[in-house]
Every structure is written in structure tokens, then in C-alpha cells.
Image (tube, rainbow, N blue to C red; front, side, top):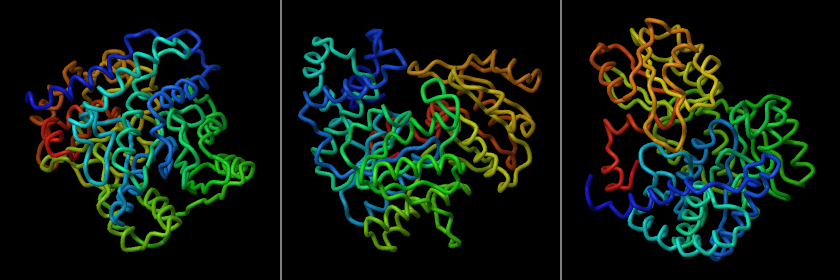
Length: 429
């Protein structure tokens, strides 16, 4: 790897290594999750409150929030606004999380901002008030500093896991709040039932704001969101799929619902249809049913929960292919049977592998094979790149290789077609 980006890699390594400092016990307790915002608010205060005096569009939900965020950001960019975008997770390299208009943050600027926060972090840590900040909090602090420095007209902010106690909820009143499809994910944090999960997600609805959600949501979810809006005197909007057709760069039926949400927000902001049309046509995200190669067709998709796999299945129905080769990995707290059950019968061979990042623990491939009862149909490769190479050797021109189950897996294998250095050099995903 080029020495040109050494300072960038050192900055990334510093942020990622923060987890090797044990968190204080109080901060680990589920009933103390409000400590997150207290902790983050104190850190931002020491940094000069860079999150204030910006116009935010806050995007939440279980599925589709990243797509909606990118669509809105692209529309605003087409309209001539200096537009910041924060999304998570990244696919191949860390700076993919922070973007202004059509360019990722400059790796040099990223490294400089990380250097800037280190003395503040040292002072903060020694107060020993709330425990250490998390990797996500530090990364978000860097994003706020960058957006303020670049004098953004708007910042489109995608939540992390969630809602009420999500670090992104530190922002003041946004110009618009969106909660896309709510379904089951991160249940160990957000709750076991749809009602409990919604109660956490709706914590981003602030008083006297403008709120949007999708008609795809369960009626109970919509009712709960409406009640919260009424209590907060927030304008409530449920967006249906219009009859018109959208021209979209992103593939799949679900993207039409995402586009409808993005369009509704853009219209509320007073943006003209020509910017909406162009923005939706240009908006794209990697590893969202991304067709990265043809003959054989290779698709990268980070689907890691039931609702996202459902979208993958709907998209597969619209494709013509002969044999399906499936390459999968999961993080260790997922439920493989529920997630992969509909895909298993469709595949000729299933490659069970892992991702290389140490940020998350991987579901053990051997355990994954046993859980899915794959026997001879499942092949284990601890090196995902070798699994991909084997699938590419076996697949014929009219076959399909689908890589799914994890953004980490999809992002790492995407390097075969688009290297990390190229992304850093061009500042484009």
C-alpha cells in the first residue's frame, strides 16, 4: 500500500484501537444507555460544539436508511447546496462514512482532524466522568468538525444502531426527521418486540419538527410513530409509493419506496422536480444489491437481517440466471436460520466464510454450517477471497454469485474490483 496514505491509516488505527480501553461498568448497563448522550455531549463541548448551527436531516429506521440518506444528499447537491453526508457502516475504507457533495473527506483532512481531537480526548479521558468515548462517537465528532469547517448548508445524518440514545441524537432540532422501515435488528439493545424497537427508534422525533415515514411499516408501528408526533407537535407524514416510475441507479423494488421518501422530503424543503429527478438518478451506495461484474454476474449485498434478505429475494426474482453460488458471513449475534433460510434452497453451493475486521466478532463458519444443516452443500473457507476465487472458477457465464450477510464481507471482497487505494486517491466510492 502506498506511503501516501500512512497518516490516514494511522488515524484510522487510532480510532479503531480505542476499544482496547475497558469501558466503565456503569456505561455497560442497558438501563444506563442515556450515558451515551451525556458522554458525547461533554466531548463535543470540549471540542467547541461543532454540531451546532447546522441544518440537519436525520434519517433512522432498521432498513433503507442509508439509501434514503444518499438520495436526499444527492438531490441537495444537485440543487447547488454544500451538502454533508454521514452514513454507516463503511464498506471498504473508513472515510466512506463522511462525504461532502460527490467527494469523500480528503484522507489528509481526516488525519489532521483526528490529530486535532487527541489532546481534547486526553483531557476528557482523565476526568473519568462517563467512561471512554466509543469508536462511533469519535468518528462522528470528526464528521461534525469537518462539516462545520466546510460550512455545509445541509447535513444528512444517518443514525447508528438507533434512536433515543444514539450518538447522532445529540443534534438540535433538524429540518426533517425520517424513520424508514422498522423491523427486527439489534434486539439485544433495542428490544425484543416491534413495539419496543419502535419506542427506541422514535426517540429521534423532536418537538415541532417535520416527520416522515413509509407506508411499508406495520400498522402498529405507524400508529406508534403518529402518537409520538402528536405528543411532540411534530408534523406527521406517511409516504405511499406513487404510481409514477423512478429512474434509479440503485436496484430493487424497495428502492422505489426509498425514492418516494426522499422526494417527499425534498419537496418539503422546496426543491424543484428537476433536481429531485437528477439526484435520484445519480444516487447510489455500494453493496446494496450492487452488480459489480457480469458473465458471471457477481452481486454484493450487505443484507444482514430478515427484512433486508427479503429485499434481496425480491430482487433475485427479477433476474435470469442458471446456478446460484452463495458466499455468506455473519456477525456472531445474528440468527442464521431466520436470515438465510429462504436463500439456502436456491443455491448450488454455499461458501461459509468470515470477514477480516476485528471491529466485530464473526459467526464461526463451522457453527454456521451446522446451524444451517448444509452438509455437503456447504464449503468452509476461512479466507473469503479464496471462497470468491473458487466460486468464480466454478461459475459459468450465465450463473450468479451472491455475496451477502455482512457489509464487512461485501466491502472486503469489493476490493477485487475497486481497491482501497483507488477509493482514497479518487475520493469516490
